[in-house]
Amino acid sequence: MEMTSLIISIVSAIVAVLSVIISFVVMQISKKTLERHHESLRREKALELLLHWGTTLHKNSALVRKYVEELDKTQTEQLYKQEEITFDTGSKELCTKIKKLLDVKAAENSENKLTPAECTELRWLVVTYLNKLEGILIAWRHSIADTKIIEEQFSYLINPDTEHEVLKEFRQAAGGNKSYPSIALFCKHMNDKYKIPIDRKQSL
Image 1 (cartoon, rainbow, N blue to C red):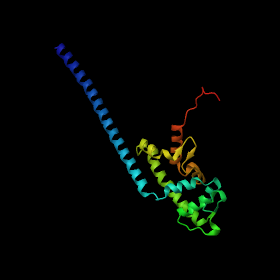
Image 2 (image 1 turned 45 degrees about the vertical axis):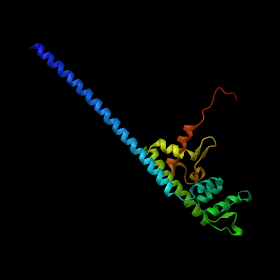
Image 3 (image 1 turned 120 degrees about the vertical axis):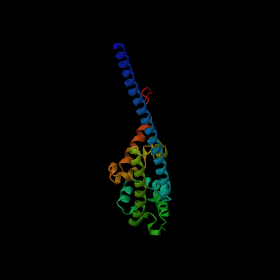
Image 4 (image 1 turned 90 degrees about the horizontal axis):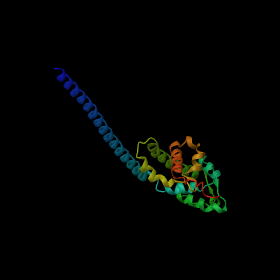
């Protein structure tokens, strides 16, 4: 009788242990399945955002970004405040390009200036570009979209070697990191990620 009770106890213990093991395995499988599902959703979200980015931007958005990044600090601040911008002889060509971008026929006496109205239109294009970019990078920042895909597709906006960051001067004029926090964090992350480590053995 005692032997039977012992056997029953042992079997019960084994069953209990097996139940725990099976429950743990099932839980791990469910966890991994859920993680794979979430990863798939994040990839889909990243592709959705990239498609939206490509189809809703102004047709000349790349040129808008390029030209505004060529403005000096004072000109950038004037642009943000929608004030008249004057270009010297050396940068008059940039003024002409911007007017052409805005589809403005430059008068002879204003070919080296952007009027407040022209600055308002240009500023609107820049702000639209940054708002769309900030929206995508919010998804990157909070891992709503696949971070690797986003980083691959937008890494061209940052160049650690030249310390270039997308529309940095304009973002500073707009209030710095407070205005576009996700863009600022993305720039910092990418700079840190691709920063070339210093070889401490190399002679100066």
